[in-house]
Image 1 (cartoon, helix red, strand yellow):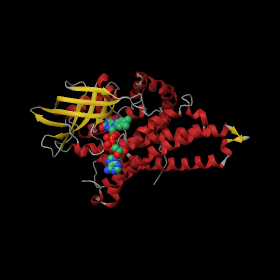
Image 2: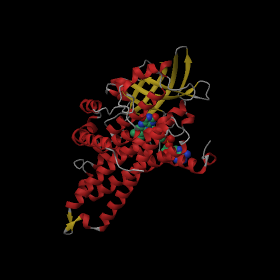
Image 3: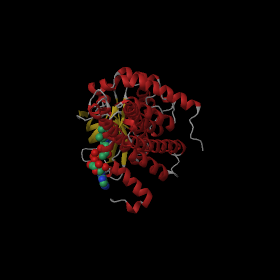
Image 4: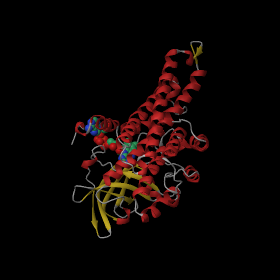
Length: 397
Ligand SMILES: Cc1cc2nc3c(=O)[nH]c(=O)nc-3n(C[C@H](O)[C@H](O)[C@H](O)COP(=O)(O)OP(=O)(O)OC[C@H]3O[C@@H](n4cnc5c(N)ncnc54)[C@H](O)[C@@H]3O)c2cc1C
């Protein structure tokens, strides 16, 4: 066992750190205020190969491993504290990977290259107005009609609806089959006739839109079916393993940045005649948060390593281990990061409450991962309960 990064990973992380420090930090406030990630940020990400980076080179990606993608998510979460760029990045990475693995050859060749070039957006659509946790009860339906599937229904609280409408692209969409006992997973282009978009007003990560998509007799060519007909639930769950790992990594990046800001501050801010950092009450909080961030970070690296070693190779024999580790990091990373930002805000006193210091960007952005994005905290607890105690202990059927 070796915890060290190789030369390649070190060089990659340094490149990403420079990109985060120079490009993302320079834009995080403006993208939060403008409600959109600037073209220059996306084109730089495309140039660095960061968009949908696990997609194989033949479809325009860099064929990155899950560990490389995890490192990138961490650096992007650290660079753009609002989380908007991290969300854009991790959705395309996680779901681009699923389309590359299970999509038809035609769909891969058509859909993935413009996503990797930063021209189109690719996201995920599972949540509905009636709920996101209990996907078994979803109402959006699709049925075969010759060479097409026809989709009817509504999805809500989806990231990137406006980006997909304006730029092109769409969402991998989980729909119930007409017979009712299976699920079709379909790439639905947002510009297809019959799709309408509503943007919601969020409290944070403003640089990427969140909203609803309504489908009225939307014709989706059968080439956009992901995996086998009726088995869509499995591919969606497989995608969540990756997306949740990258969410956790982005949260860790934000937590590390907050800790660094906090350490700079408590070394310099004098109260009662000495630096704040000399008081145990503050130093012990720093020690606790550092230990928690490090613990979750290494568990997150383990999650990415498990993806590379098992899940991304199609090895389902270790599924329970992957699920346990991924659910652990998606459960803990948002909480640890949110708590770290909150504590550092307190160290800053009144200035921590200002937009000038900027901690509030992270505070608002990280909250999205507490309430639900990529699965609520209690859903992670339910997964852990299921894997630790057995399926018969799942509290619902
Ligand atoms: C900013 C943002 C972006 C999002 N982007 C996307 C996206 O791109 N694509 C997409 O499909 N969805 C997206 N979502 C939706 C997200 O997946 C859902 O919020 C999540 O699945 C929870 O669903 P819900 O909000 O309907 O809450 P509900 O399912 O109604 O649950 C409400 C609360 O109860 C908890 N809960 C649920 N069941 C149980 C139980 N059995 N026991 C105890 N507690 C329980 C949940 O954890 C949650 O806290 C996004 C959400 C946010 C906030």
